[in-house]
Amino acid sequence: MALIEIKNVKKQYRSGDDIVEALSGVDISIEVGEFITIMGQSGSGKSTLLSVLGGMNHPTEGDVEMAGVKLYQLSSEKLADFRAQNLGFVFQSFHLIPYLTAMENVMLPLAIVKMAAEARKSAARQALERVGLGGKLDRLPNQLSGGEQERVAIARAIVNSPKILLADEPTGNLDSKTSEEVMALFRELNDAGQTVVMVTHNPENGRYADRSIVLRDGVIV
Amino acid sequence: MKLHTISINNLKRRKAKMAFLTIGLTVGIATIVTLVTLTRSMSSDIERKMDEFGANILITPQSNGLAMNYGGISLGGVSFDQREIKESDLARIKTIANHKNVSVISPKVVGGIEVANHDVLLVGVNFDSELKLKQWWKVFGQTPQNVSELLLGSDAAKVLNVSTGDQLELKGEKFIVAGILEQTGSQDDALIFAALPRAQKILGKEGKITLAEVAALCSGCPIGDMVLQIAEKLPDAKVSAIQQVVEGRLKALDQFKRFSYAMAAVVIFIGSLIVFVTMMGSVNERTTEIGVFRAIGFRKSHIMRIILLEAALVSLLAGFLGYGVGMGGAKLALPFMAESKNAHLVWDSAIAFGSVGLALTLGVLASLYPALHASKMDPTEALRAL
View 1 (cartoon, rainbow over the protein chains, first blue to last red):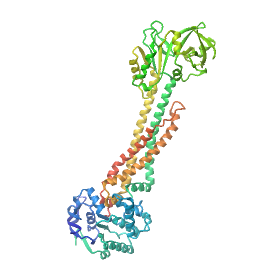
View 2: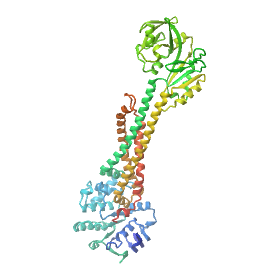
View 3: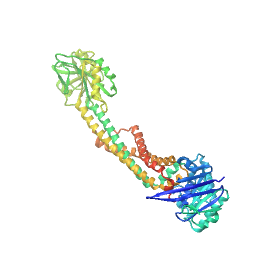
View 4: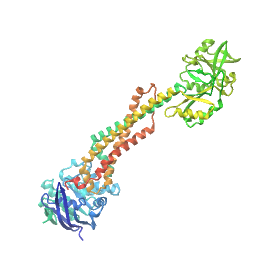
């Protein structure tokens, strides 16, 4: 059984008097342990698709089923719980909290989970070590390079051992060398069994994935 | 790492904004503390003054006869229709509803006697309560310590040509002049004061009194009601208030109180507005941050808790600072506001707890909408990038 099942998902936005269709009937099935890249030009609907997948953007039509749960049949608070337990997000601009250290940023998803303080710290330390930042636990985001910030963002996304890791243009703000390192890290995580869904406009990143989905004008081509 | 870590670290990061918020609230709370403390201290000062000014309720016998003056105060009739109040009846005053506001009861027996060929008014008093009532009295020598000692008004001492330590005979009974009053400018100057039981005996009025003066602590106690309550307990007596002293002062204090409360209301409104605007601005600045929290699974209640905890921490600090600054302000302002130079500042734990509680309530209530607004942010909208 597929881990993620998207059936005939449509998403329309109102823009003034016009209605813009960002997704026009998308069907995707993703298996456990897959590494998928979603590619397409700006405005093709790839970020909308990722936000729909992340349980943050209610589709106008269609179903999104994840780990056997129909996401958009959940209340907004249950959906938040689902995200906390099953999803990890890596954002394009890292979106680290500037006043929290690397360690605290990584512990954020655990702040709302009932667990011992020591267990929280241990999980965050392990996640940071896994992305190669074991020596920079107490650094604030502005004391880290772009690549390091991206790694902290990845550590934050995997600290709660999510079923699915969603990444939106994770290399968009990085130079080519750092991009390769980050993509290698995603590959490494995937090799360890992590399901990864990544939005990217860079065709180079496709070679790290098992499968690439290309979107154009809200439909898969 | 818990939710409060986020609140505390955010406060540390936004020092300038949070300092502005704290100062705004502190000024508000300090103003309220100053006004309330000043009002209370002034009330207490006036209460103390009331004692110094003497009686504010007079109990005299019901009389149809001619009036006689005592210190400018009308007493019951004496010459033709003289009645007295039983001394034992005064105990009933302590059973009135407002008995806690009764500070001093000073019974007196008054009667004319002849001393060394001079007509003099003899007043029997309970020296303890009389001295408490007439704090302006200055005594040369000593105040009488036993029933054989007298206190003379300055004019009486002059006319009778006696000084402290001299012997004086009243209706065949011998007394020692223990003290002489410094000139008061009142009728007291012409009187001879003796211990109540001895004077009653000399005047043939054992167990009876001519009048009683009552000093009431009048801030917050209705003198009119007390007069009625005493009149109910003593149906044969005439109970009257010395209205001008009481009402004039209470009215002035009441006006200041009302002004204080109006000021406090304005300050509370402005303080709430400062908190609301600052917290709203802070929430709007943190749109992305809140979007991240929501995306990684924070519930709306988690977001509200973060924002409200920040507000509560700042408000608590402002509450403590406001209390301190407010009390300092009251201490500085009291000498200019109170009537006497030695007015005491009232330190009331209720004001301390109240100011911290008010700051907390104000801060949290004014932050409720910004917190609600933050919790309702759409994570996708908030992040935009996603």
